[in-house]
Amino acid sequence: MRREEKQSVNRQKVNEFCHRIKAGYLGLADGHLPYVVPLNYVWMNDCIYFHGAEEGRKQRIIEENPQACFTIAEDQGTITNPVPAHTSTGYYSVMIFGKLEIVHDIEEATKSMQVMLDKYVPGYFSDKLSKHHVSSYRSSKNSKTVVYRLRAEQVTAKENKLIDEALFYNGRTREQDLEERPSE
Image (cartoon, rainbow, N blue to C red; front, top):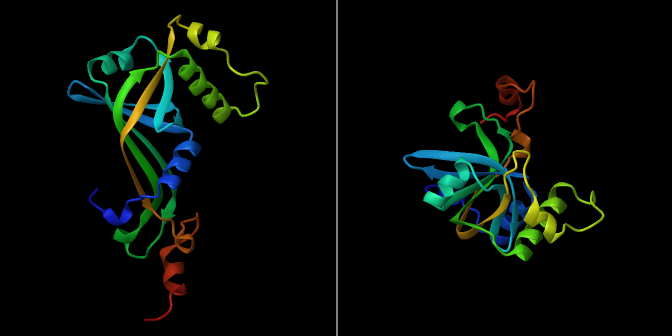
């Protein structure tokens, strides 16, 4: 990481962030082209889990090269500064690198999909997800759905803390900020 002062090494904060954020971006290498897909996911046992079709471009790419990067990021707002080059963004981001695998164990697949339901629609279903549902589900195009796991081999996190008093809001101007600054 080039800007080490931005590195976040607090493992608990990384875990909480990975659990809380709803969407992430799966980065794959399709030959010489990058291929990035936004996905719903869950973070469980130091792995990213998501589901998708058994066939299609993503599956073909994973079969050819299972190495992947999953990125999760949160924009927390714009940080103003009268000097244009010092205007910035508050953010937190995590990148998870590893090898993608299809989850063949029905217990693990069902548990990960139950965790996903609990994350996205907590309390909506009164019954737990059945193994039969997970193993037999077909998409609207009649493709079998599979569960993928990205085992975290490397995790990096980066943070630019938001400065509340410098948070941009509509109507805020540079001139106002310069008037409010104490004389130097």
